Image (cartoon, rainbow, N blue to C red; front, top):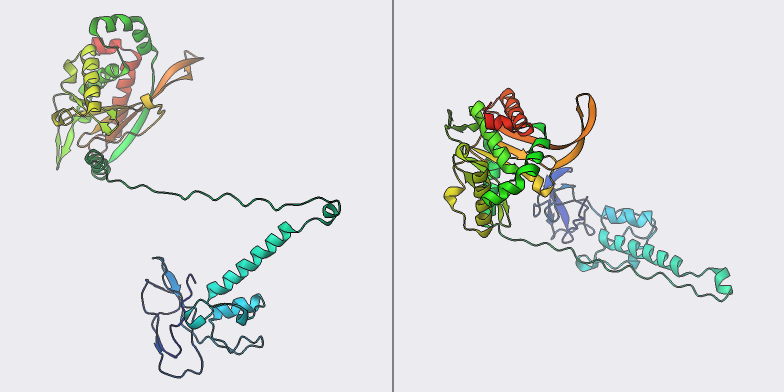
Length: 382
């Protein structure tokens, strides 16, 4: 029983509309009461109804008065009230009722019990120790606890960009059979190249050589070997693309945008870094065009810039693959039978299992790993 439902008036219970144990909604009639009939006393009940939108079992409304030796038997009350009075040896005449015409409800009895318990606790706290009082010491009650600040909520309408992102994410989960495979890449060779040639590269091209250019080049090489990862699904057809338009995820204050590197297979490392830098600046300034955000065939996202160690990137529909880069960290690995510390990165490939088999996905990610660990493979195209 969640809520006590007293009869609204004296009378005779003519019909019970909700069986015991039934679940009812708020406002559902539980019984029919004839208020004009003389029932020989007031009627009430402890039938339950839904309170504040919560379903509760409904019990039948029963006559409230039962003979009792405690002097409470001639007063209209529900069985729940009677039970509490008997358990705690209370006289109903000492309780002020909040029901109709002063009827005592269950909450009234509980309030009295709660007040009595609080008074007893306060008396114990304030009662001084006899020995200390005799010594002339004063015992003070502990200070009342500080009031807790009210918890607040804030609601705001999604921006059009956020609503579009949400729509695309749900679309991806609903339409694709997405699966993710993982691998590790030793970043030693890439870090060494950046260390040895970084300053000269920046001086010549006006941009720093980052990790993304290596992964774009490695992805293009792998896409050429596994064209199904560069494909998409349209109805019951697989569309193979003979071009490589690679989307690069860029985080902005308004949300995640994915500008597309067109014909990435024709771009040098300097072209890739310069284009990504321009995209990032324009995306954060809100000046990037819609045509630059659509039509990609594959996507790369780098959660490592935020410290992500491992993730399962979500597909960018209608694409069939997305590569996730992560944080580089020193880890113990076995090289030539010896345990050494190497800068390692977790790689994740999410793919559409409708057209990409597990074997192809694993081998595709392995190709990227090989290119990153030995960048000369990308130059020599093998």
